[in-house]
Length: 144
View 1 (spheres, rainbow, N blue to C red):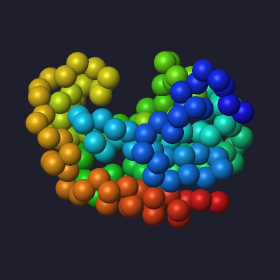
View 2: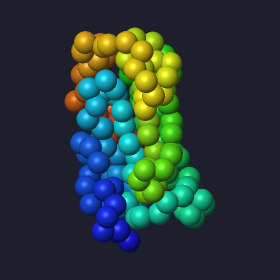
View 3: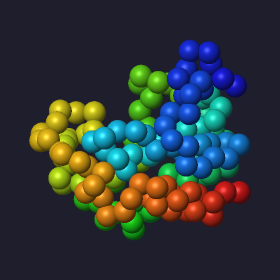
View 4: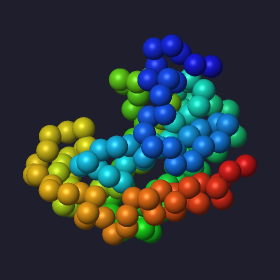
């Protein structure tokens, strides 16, 4: 099911990294937070609890796989997980590698910036195309 005014029903939501019939994972284009991934449920549902037990398991295993890759590949200070949906009520999870040098840390990425960061992408331990490949490979293992 899609909803005509839902941006996550109508648009990819970022650079496509991997997808199944149930979900897709994109990397969000954000200069301040280059290691920002979003898992988007393909069907338009607003709440995690609307998924069946098997779907919830599939969804959270994919989120877990993304988080593991970010930790292993980038050694971030923290990984933020969020499923808010207040602005876009379409089930999606944010998986964001955070660093003590990023513009907002320790504030949330949607909070106030505390410092300027010249080139966040250059500060990562791995180029984004290689990070995307690692995320895709980890997600391929989790697929049912």
